[in-house]
Length: 123
Image (cartoon, rainbow, N blue to C red; front, side, top):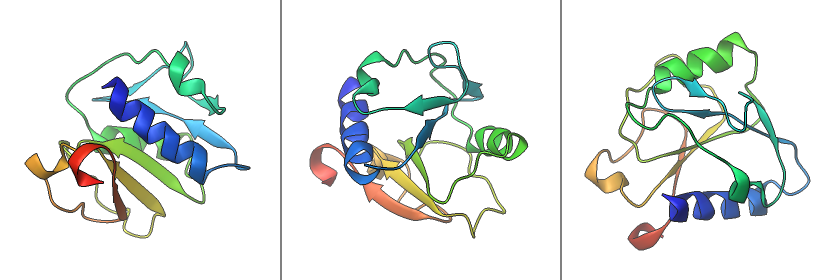
């Protein structure tokens, strides 16, 4: 939802001030944003992001794509509702899962990484 994106990017903008942020979006596969699969994110860009895809989320496919393109960073952040197939073999990865308020309906804790809940009653 637009509210979840706004909450997520508000946190990203606060946490990542002074850092380069590369944006990759995915559902069942990695999806382009404004014609590109990897976008350099700048403060306020969330208002202009036109998401495609929508449905059947696969962390496995997305993580494999990031592996193939050598895009893992010192810190990686994923916005999700938690309803997806979980990858294995990434236990040492620096990763923050930003779960939307809907998380409690699907899963209580991911198999690795840190967890942050954003939006609504889970703040």
